[in-house]
Amino acid sequence: MKLTDFKILTFDVVGTLVDFETGIVEYIRPIAEKAGLKLDDEAILLAYGKAEGIEHERTPGLPFVDMMEPCYMAMAAELGLPSDDASRDGFRQSIPQWPAFPDSVEALKRLSRHYRLVAMTNSNNWAYNCFSEVLEHPFNDKVTAEDVESCKPDPLFYGFARGLQSPLGFRKADYLHVAQSQYHDIGVAKKLGYATCWIQRRMGREGFGASPEPAQFTKPDYHFSTLAELADAVERDFAAAAA
Image (cartoon, rainbow, N blue to C red; front, side, top):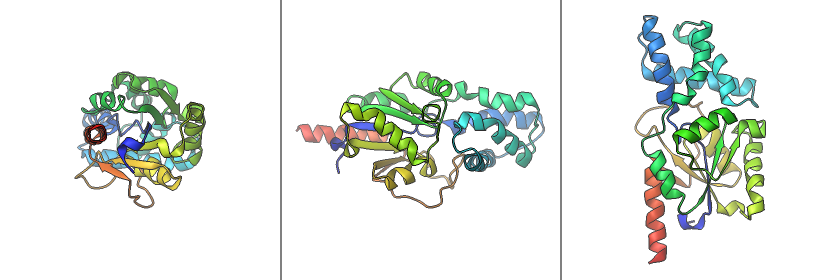
């Protein structure tokens, strides 16, 4: 299996391309400080990851955007944050301020020279449009939880995405799924027979941060700490193939 063998890259967006952990911390920290709380960043992220995992079990078909208000209330109960309506509602509304990772925009431009790029995100279409804007609109197509009426890691999500691209002639062997979440993406994509690329954005840090903890670790086909490293490897392989 070579990087030159693939024709289409499907992407997890939140956590892989958009730095949602920074977005969460930058929203929660001022609220905590105003309330007189001194919270470690990892404590904030772990509380969110735990709350989201519970919401995925409780309401598995909802886009994560619709889980954010109950997630905030669970975090408030665990961390002692204020539970007023403005703080709760503002968590969801902070999404447009979530930043792209520093390498995302340029790496996506480089990858687009070799592959079709498709977003596969557990967001709704409003949030997807926010993320696409911050990423400078890199995708040829998108699949959202609002479109599918289901969320990753539901295998239905992957089947929907593949069906959407099948009229263009893509087969399973043409796909490389690129993601940071072992819970939402790498485990299920590998089980379904897709090649996988784990972008380990938390390389060197313990735990899974704001992502729910997977039941087990899945070894990916490719493993990088940044998207730029994947783009570098792709360019090396295509240059070698052309030589």
